[in-house]
Length: 175
Image (cartoon, rainbow, N blue to C red; front, side):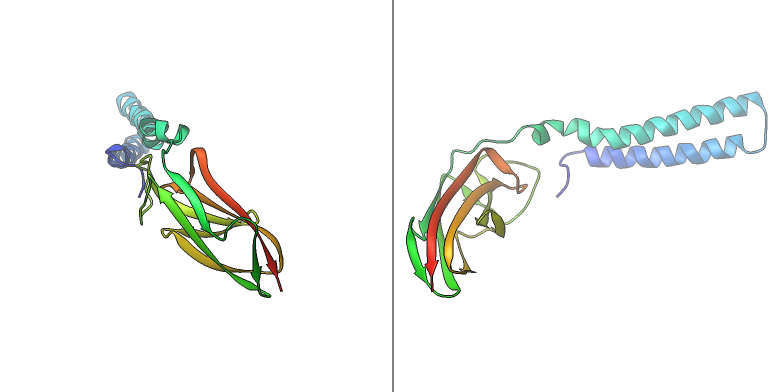
């Protein structure tokens, strides 16, 4: 995981260069008032400050676009079970979720390399996240009452596609 490409390696190199510049500035500015040593120490301090600033900003600048825009997907998601309006018996009842995903692929990893048709399934019951899954099925228990199950196909970074790909179904549990 992490930011792909060379940005992390360059940022790490800049961090070490900055630490070296700080050490050099410290040595040059210790106790001596020679104007040339003082100027060199201040110069190394400025270099250190620049290195630390670039090391912090570079990964964000190089990889800014994917964090600002979300990929779209052509996938379709459908809840096969429970059916809309289904009445389940139990107190609590075991609810079996079955999903169909067409045009998309569930992958078992998280990444910042976003692909438009690869991701995970997030399951919500009554608006509360109950599962993040790499499967098209799940089960949970529900107390008597009216409930809503929502499934969402999300990108490999666990954030939604744009627009969101959601499927919902309402069902009732009776004792």
